[in-house]
Amino acid sequence: MKHSLFTWFVFLFSITTGFSQVFTNREVGQKNQSYIDSLKSAEYPYALPIWGDRATKAGFSLPYSAGVSVNYLWQESDLILENLMVGFNGGQKLDVDDIVRFNTAVSRASAISVRPDVWLFPFLNVYGVLARTQASTEVGFGVWLPDSLNIHSEVFSAGSKVDFNAGTFGIGMTPTIGVGGGFLALDLNITWTDVPQLRVPTRTFVFGPRFGKNFKLNKPESALAVWVGGFRIDINNEQSGSVNLNEVLPVDQLQPKVDLGFEKVELAQVKVDEWWEGLTRVERLNPVNIAKFTAANLAIEKASTFLVAVDGALNNGESSTVQYSMERRPADLWNFIVGSQYQLNKSLMFRAEVGFLGSRTQLMTGIQYRFGL
Image 1 (tube, rainbow, N blue to C red):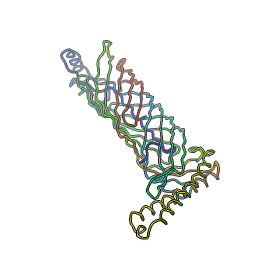
Image 2: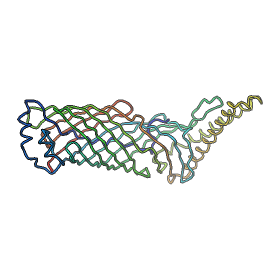
Image 3: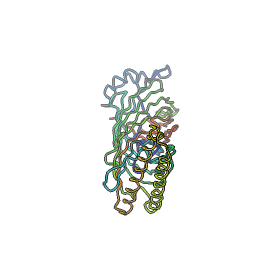
Image 4: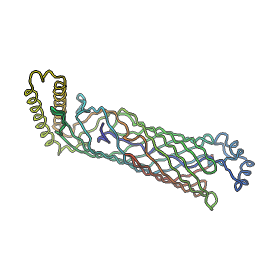
């Protein structure tokens, strides 16, 4: 398994967390009895949500039925990449999963998202997501070979950083209910992010359960909500694409490393051959030694082929391209979240939320405006 991101493999996710902290609340308590009576006796003035009039007559207080929110997000996260294949200039892709290791990688992104929403039913909010993201990925990787004792050594290393912009659209829903100001919300959404370096949009599924409490303040219609919960993300596993080599690797610094890599591969071959030649006839028939010899030679051959392909791409200059395919998944599916929202009135709200624990950290702030529909 390899941790985090390789330059062209982009991970965008948290722009989908458009959770809006408003909910249908069952009013309880003697001090709220007059308000409960007014809800039951008043005519519900809006078309949405469906059955809104029934909910108010049952003593539920409803938020305004439509709204739009603007959110800012910052996130930092890791991925695990597997089954990596790489090709150059349209040539055959090489399976380099067992010789390429990623030692350091950091992905950072910031995004602005817009989320229009409506309450379809008193306990179900549906919404859309539109977002624009700026992101960067830094990564270090190396090519490693095993010797006769299956001890791996690095023969080639490099690092890179790539910046990119992407657009996102998606849909979601939030089943939620509140009683006496306490609430439970289950936010679910699916989005597609169009990254120029990828052949198909990145599909992301997010599930965010939250449990919290809404506290009324002295000012009419004002309130302060706090919540805790989780954030689970899943992305489409298979990824492929094509990029220019000079966009993802420091081409001007790469040739000396490739030349040194050739020397180390040759030295590794000499060591493996010397070890094999030093074995007795009986030792050569040992299945363990045969497996070691075969594995070492396959790895050396693969590394040599990979370096030849890189060397050829470097000689083609700025026109060189890199083709790739892989399987990827988040290093951690879940992280913990804590959030709060200040409601100035039923139309205007301000919120902030942080996510942490595991390999993912995120921060979101937002403003929301609501109205009757």
